[in-house]
Length: 106
Image (cartoon, rainbow, N blue to C red; front, side, top):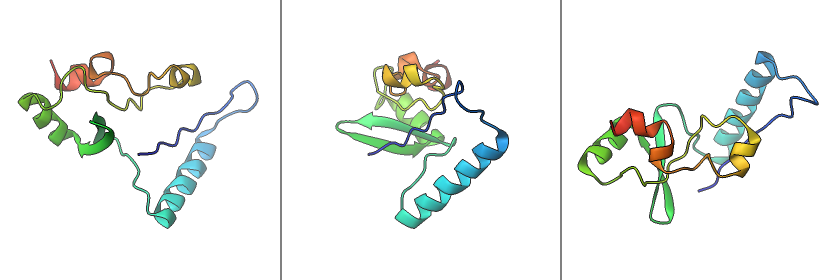
């Protein structure tokens, strides 16, 4: 799996709703052109073996309930908003260190 992470240096430029909308349109257009599937807020992406797997939230909840995924399972955390967090690897933590813990394991 490959991930596209886009960041802005707020000290050098301003980010507006219009620029975010334009970026979203461009990424969506390019994903269609190249046949790339984008992760939506309805998805959970987690690590299974050497692969990253995308499933609907309901399916991840079922996997958590059955024990197939647990608090040690690496997950994609798209709520990370600072580049230093990305560089530190916090965008792919164990489920115990992200919002997944409260959503699926409590």
